[in-house]
Image (cartoon, rainbow, N blue to C red):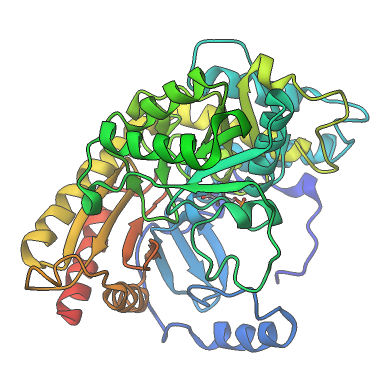
Length: 461
Ligand SMILES: *Cc1c(COP(=O)(O)O)cnc(C)c1O
């Protein structure tokens, strides 16, 4: 019975292990099954239609790389709650740390009476974000809130108002971040008016624009110089690998060239590492792959294995720009979320998860290369670590060979779900299939999922 209250003291130390879900794919009912359908009917009566679900199977238990629903179906999870359960679902260290912290203190509000866990998370962020200089952090609750605070801090530091972002970017669902997104639908349409002084600069999209990093950077900088004007620009916010935009990896040299321009012009350059950070790409932060040392780094999703926590971390002199009391919020840096985050850092370190991300990249990209030889609608394979995507395009002739193929992505996602594999889509045109598993996804499970993917491609071809 899920509504039976269990006193915390009775939870055994190995609770995370005893809750373990077998690491396998298993479909025992139609998808969604009868119990999920009942819950869906209840949900429809009381949950806003504005909140939708990719796959309305209701999850009862999750562990490692597998989700188990209320009908007993088990799904290989290639979404990880959009890159949140990077260290796996219900990881033992995190569950135990959060449980222990829950007994000690649930909340005081750091801006009233502080506690050590917040300070420890800030120390870990200072140690693991790119750059060898003094760093400070502020902790908040969500990715969008981290973006908002990064912009606040950059504005206060520079005394300027302008905020620049790149085409195909995604930064959140609050009023400011809606204005920073590329895609109107579904994030912005009908929800305006939006915040002003947000500028959308051209990006780098090697598969489609054919530009070198230097050429793409010159185009971006030309726009910032002429259309915005450096004198009014507080910050340039960039995802080192774009998430919702389709796991875009920019041409080599693009990011360092933008950072050089920002530094020369007094613009704060901010890495939105909300999806790409926290070991997901085989480095703590994806910026490292591209020789980019940002001024500020935004962390969220994977930092606490599912507990809501986010951070702005960066150069101490920029982070200290705000007057005391200018930053904060009721729940920001909650003690239980901080204890979970500390355990996430320990888990990455002690269980060698950076190497696991690189293993996943090798197995997954090799399998996807094999599929590309069979299916010409796979136009591009890109990403790093456990953040890999394929861009699907038209089949056959030169004219259709780069036409975005969203229909194939939808069909493949639907087919795989029926077989017990959860894939997510992405991309400005919805034509990108992304693989964002936890770092617990074994090679055996990846090969199993690739088999399902092969069948799914055959069914669309
Ligand atoms: C998810 C995401 C956000 C927003 O984070 P929330 O926690 O959903 O507010 C911002 N930027 C990127 C790159 C993201 O992937």
